[in-house]
Length: 348
Image (tube, rainbow, N blue to C red; front, side, top):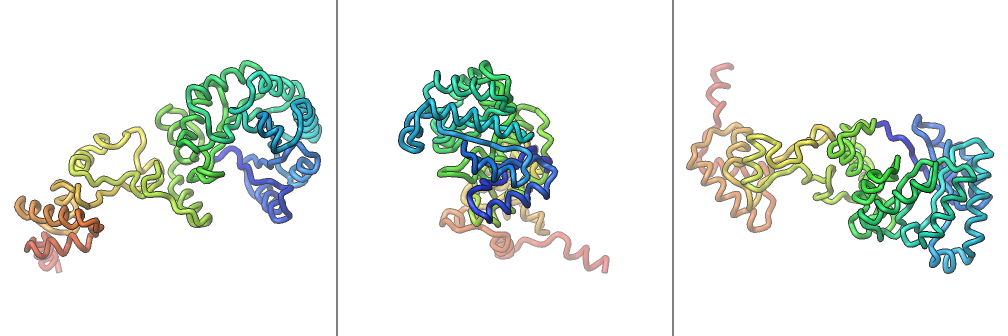
């Protein structure tokens, strides 16, 4: 699809994960990245796996330094610099992350960034590890980071407050060149910025070419849903079953006339490999019912459309899904004739 970087995994984690990262690195034309703590063994495992980029990280917030790493700020800076230098000496691209950046003392964060910049890192990733950033605050942080490094800036956002994609976009507006995203938003806790949301926002709202083949986004989402065993909610933006579905009579009538009336316009179902659907339920109006009846070969009068619409609304109000079979049954009970029956007999 043209995805630029695939962070394939954490090679030191296990033999199976090392092999998975190695296999991905040897099987794709995208840049492959391996994750590593600021630990020699992690970095060696990542390098041995054959990735073109190593993403090394260390906690920088005091709570994580003291209660997770059991280290000091000075040790953090030292380990960060040594790890960046080791990766660069190996001749691969280096990305460095100050983990929990959005809960890190700002002055110390800048100290770390300046130190790894001097050590030669190619990328600095700013992670909102615990999902506590807001778009305005995150944008200001990325602007400050960009002012203190010559490295390219990347962002990594979590969805604890439903702001991951918004924060990622705010980071890009502030000067970040890249965002880390995951298909269907799968990630720790509430997940990460969603691949499909971020790509389509950049393409459609910002009118920028990502180089991604967006027509395969729905296909990719369905594949990840199947392989991960994690169901995609129907109301998931871009790829959910309801993303381009219309039940409300007002909405359906408008979309039948012109899809831009009640869809974004700058993003169509065709752009992401999906289909528009008119679904039936208690909010369905006569325009939608007529459209579906005609699609099924019926030729209803206005009175018959109104009668069937009442049946659809009543059925939907009982919290039952109105299927095409239900619609055909309602049409037959209303004595609606099929429009092509006689014509078919004549042609035969």
